[in-house]
Length: 100
Length: 268
Image (cartoon, rainbow over all chains, first blue to last red; front, side):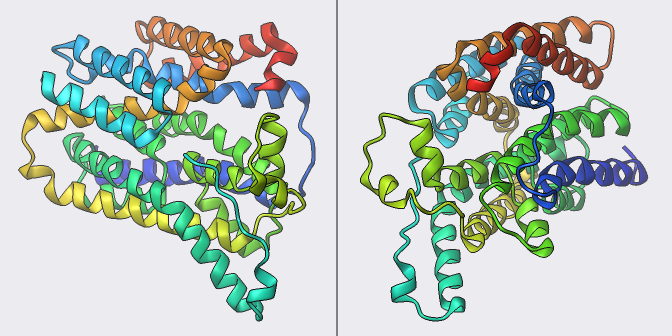
């Protein structure tokens, strides 16, 4: 990726990240969205996370797709049990690091 | 993450608004410290993965300084490594970041902000700072957890407005953890053994999983949506680049979810 392409990408990313965070704080509070849109916005994060996890997790080590899968399973179990981001990340990392 | 509660008998102990402002800010910093500690290794992994994807150290730092979004940044470097076009990267970021819109909309109901404050607080909205500010808001906690018996929450239930300086403190310390971790990551990336780099490749996915599972534990329907979306993404990625497959799977599956689930979505 050239420096220029990176610059364009970064500016786009800044806008795509900052505007969704900023706009609701600037708009008058309590203005309701259409109910279907509110529901859709509520589900999008979970659908996005699903699509981000799979099939991407198979490419943690492209030669050994199972490595990512096992790390992911470890993360699911740990997250389910302790509900803690840091512990989940560290254990998944250790599992993959030890197996690789 | 434990429930944060803001002691509110501060007016009697702190006389000037400035003192009170500083006190709220320091309370926010304290509440945000565990977030910063979690961000540090995550950002370190980001620095390593970013360099492996071909970014320079300066580019990786710039991204952490200006974007401040773990999921978005990891996603971007993954797509960059795969040779994706800027348009696909930005659109994928927008899709992932739509959740910030929902979070900020929720926060806006309990913050009273000037434009400048909104610009600062808005920049600091992440999954973790949002949850911290959300839990620091007593009325929501009581509404969400009917079985909650914590007296602190009940004592606070008259406080509807979150102090701006508290939210600012949470964000500032989290941001410093993110920047610091990225710096250490890009500086030490070259001396790390390759196994460590592969291990760090899973950090992104572990983070996504940690964001998803708590809601799945409460509502299995969310798990069904995530699995359906992952399946569609895999299917679409046979024909499209990953960025577009992910965007398409997300919008379609979320749409189907609204259609099939209807009012059930409101209870999430």
